[in-house]
Amino acid sequence: MSEPEWIASSDVVFVQPDGTRVPGTIRIAMPQPAFEQDAQCTYSLDPIVEGRPTYGVDSL
Image 1 (tube, rainbow, N blue to C red):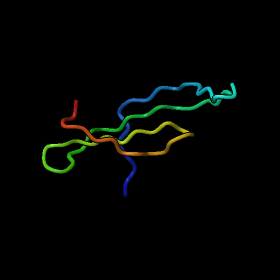
Image 2 (cartoon, rainbow, N blue to C red):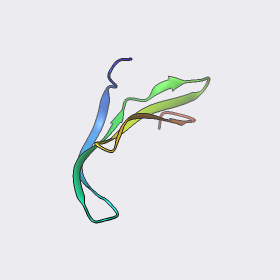
Image 3 (cartoon, rainbow, N blue to C red):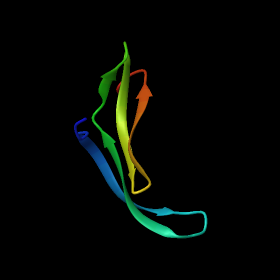
Image 4 (cartoon, rainbow, N blue to C red):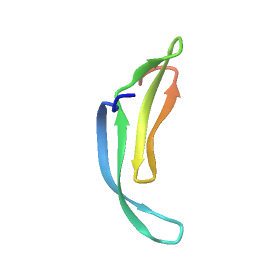
């Protein structure tokens, strides 16, 4: 599987329930066709969630 084409990103600070602060980056990849009329985008909440797809009925 190839690396997603990231089209948006933002550096953030994630705050854990215990107050610990973790620097990170939120990323969204280019929408891709999925199934019949659906689209999927890969998102990443580094370092918490790495490269997971999310699906919708269009690419907006």
